Length: 187
Picture 1 (spheres, rainbow, N blue to C red):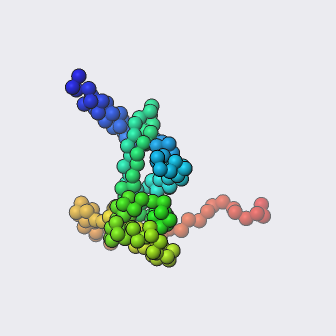
Picture 2: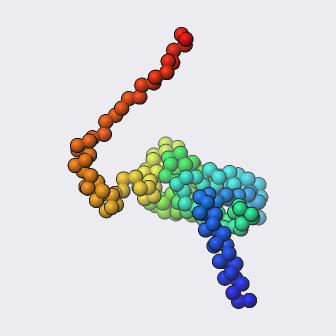
Picture 3: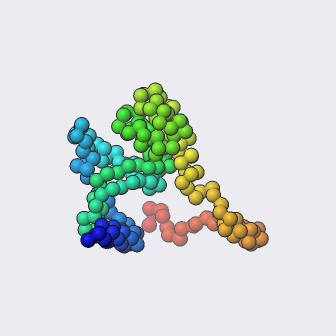
């Protein structure tokens, strides 16, 4: 019976790999999972906040259990924010209004001043314009760290060098599309 926990882990790992192979895993973030003993009314609001922050480009930590083909989340954390400017700005505004945990925001936004900077933002020491500029800077920082845009690997560089002469012989030319259908209302 000492192998029972290992078998359970193996079974869950196998199930998870199968779901990943299908390309999409459905996660359910229910407000009840986010309910706090101190303030039960904020559970729905927190679920909506996480629903907005957990978007393309974000790294998240989810803990929970499988129910059928879905993963029911019982605990979650934003590890790295999406680089999208609107998402970064939203996270900063949430932090400013006290609706986003200081430590989680500091880590997720990779704030250069760390926890202390996040604490200053949460105390309301930043104006809307400052947060907007900060969001633009953080967005660029997060994009450069998490995006392949602007990164050239040695293999990419080798490929570019290999076909350099072909690019010079056959440069990219813009081709304008001309519709063959009549778009006037005269017909």
